[in-house]
Length: 509
Ligand code: UN1
Image (cartoon, rainbow, N blue to C red; front, side, top):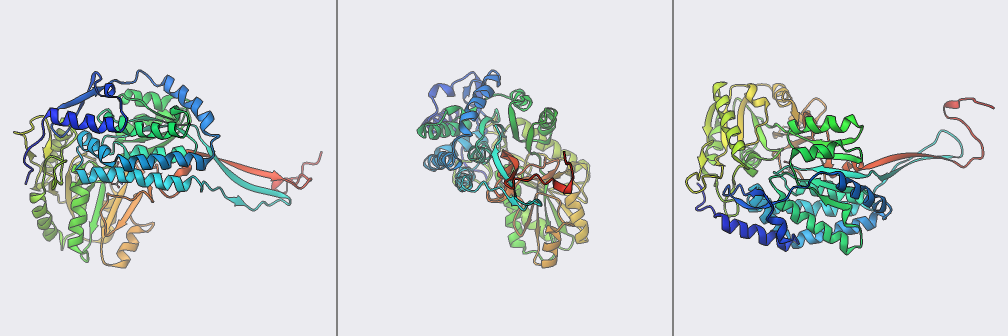
């Protein structure tokens, strides 16, 4: 099934402008010389101007930091609370921009804005809970404790697929932690970025704080590299491909800066013989076909026990054939477009290679709606059966391809889950407690996210989000991820009037 008609250039341009202007973006900012395309019809919706270089932005951010770090954390939280309220008021405007620029279906676009509101709530709470430990001192009359201080300028580099939520996870936390933020969004989603940034500026100005506490810079990877290389950027939080991380990570490390990397995923679900298959099918389809396969948590592999893999394959194929592909802003659509032509050709290439490596395309993979929208790239999500994990399975193709792989022993399934270079998310579907516990244990999945009876994508903001190995090791959002945005000072205070040395050292003078 595909939805009826794809809107033309004028309709989308008007919708995008209206939504952006309602968030406070100046009309002129939407008619720059760098065209901005909508994946919905593949046509331009206007344009933006790119920022020349980041030198001035960093200098302004550094100056704003010197003021911002003196504002008490709960007062910083008040700004984030206002941002949450503005996001709530503009939820549908921002979601419209997410749909038009990133191609997300309305429900997922609204979900992305909800995720922003949620993380604002979380950060407001945190603004009164930036706790340090108090330790017992080994010396009499001494107090040993730690204090968490603002870090400095935080650079945020975000990807097209979560054009605003990832910024909000970083920014809401960074702001309550007392840092200033410079955001370099994907060059594919600048309108959404302009709108979100306008709302934050409004919150800052209303509370009487310098507007340069939060800045937006527009440009491509080169601008991102300038940000990564700048000695006054204390933390670089970058989300994107492992290839991007290989550029950014070493550049930041070279100058002993801090980085927080959220890179590629290659997420699997293990489906055991005891699994509730109704639940598994729903969990798999949402994680594999949702967001047109363009989440870093997208399920890319199903590792199913040989006794159930045929039934599971048939059931998934039936669902895949009837998934509604089309205009993401139309009711009932479940799969929107791929972001651009290069994503679509990467999908074709991966399907081709999978077949050369012994795979069979069971369902999908076809291009849809080409007659109505020749510049857009709608693809039916693909299901591919493979006898084992061949080389193509080890690479992350950022498109909706799900590889179905059989296993015999549960230990082998865990080994297969862990065999890829990425380590973001993973799931097991089972009704056996021992299997669930083993999968989540030290001998189980090696990923940063390990789920039971739920898919690999759609994490809540309350948990720490991120993964191991080539995923980069960073953690964002909930739990104690805030610590990455602060520096820790260990304080030893001597109130004894004596000077006993630690470890019993004698140094009498
Ligand atoms: C991403 O794809 O970059 O778990 C992040 C999820 C979302 C975050 C995905 N909350 O799918």
